[in-house]
Image (cartoon, rainbow, N blue to C red; front, side, top):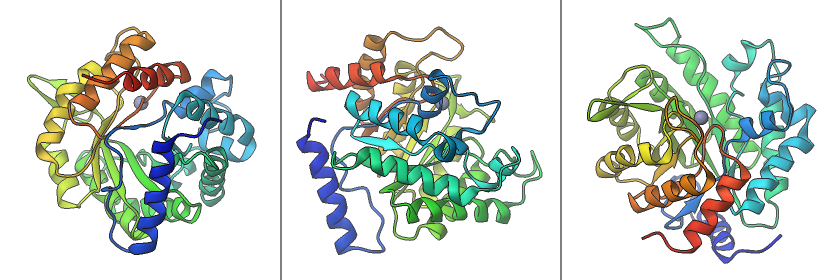
Length: 311
Ligand SMILES: [Zn+2]
């Protein structure tokens, strides 16, 4: 594998941060443009793994070679950070599928990602997805149970050696607050990024559960997320105005993980995706990658597009 100075600088900066500060989480060390990986779960499904037979997180234990191959594929494609295969690996989401090995799934995921990244300087991001439960009054989730659930997963990912946490696909402000508080509690001192899944609504955006983007951002800011972002639902070009809006409101690094297809449309070609990635960086995003359906080819095309400059 080719060594990359920018990647080595990131891992040096991370080691330095750990040495000088055990408690203050901050993403100030991120490079100006951090290219993330693409869709981990969808890449595993594309390799023939059957999500109906086993939840994706169990593959960290039963199919570690496949998970490692996906991480390697994105590293080879030029991603400077990879996310653990733990989007559906919190206790509530796993127990809904009859799985109780929460600790083993998360520790195995972190280990596989760390092995794949070893020696490359690539950052390992611990991925946390929704609980699958809806807070009141829309649903009957117990908020302290949600917070405990997120704290538990965050603690395992931290024990597994991830560099930061990324809570994704948040659509309800109360679940987002519980996730941020839980992550802080379970992984004290570790930077935590939170991303919201939105759709366009008039001339602004709403979470897919119908909450105004401003009410979602207010929670992320109140809870002092170290990074705020958007993921899923929108393709890169559709996400540009959303990222501009977040950049205008947030004083922390902004993350963007668009999907490969516009809402309800056909997948973009890799060149179109890559152009959109460049525009997301130009809009002020600090880290950009791909959500559902984005492949090695999409990320490698984005890498080449960025290496050419983005203006
Ligand atoms: Zn997605």
